[in-house]
Length: 54
Image (cartoon, rainbow, N blue to C red; front, side, top):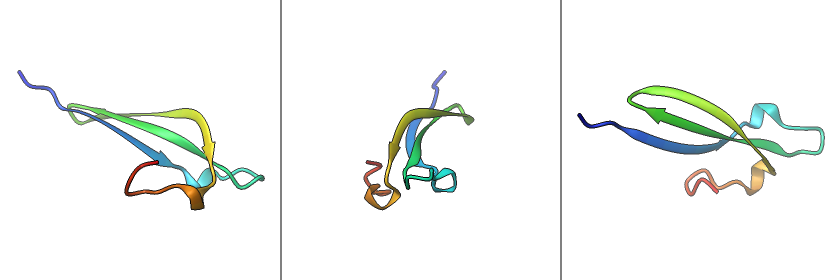
């Protein structure tokens, strides 16, 4: 039986801090079940490249 597995990093702009940084979240998908974790890292949203996920 084959399993699907996917990792995705995203910035949550809606949770931007007072200093202008936003948290990076890790989204894990296994067989269609999604879990989302905070990566405990912050980045300026304008520095985040959504296409490259970095």
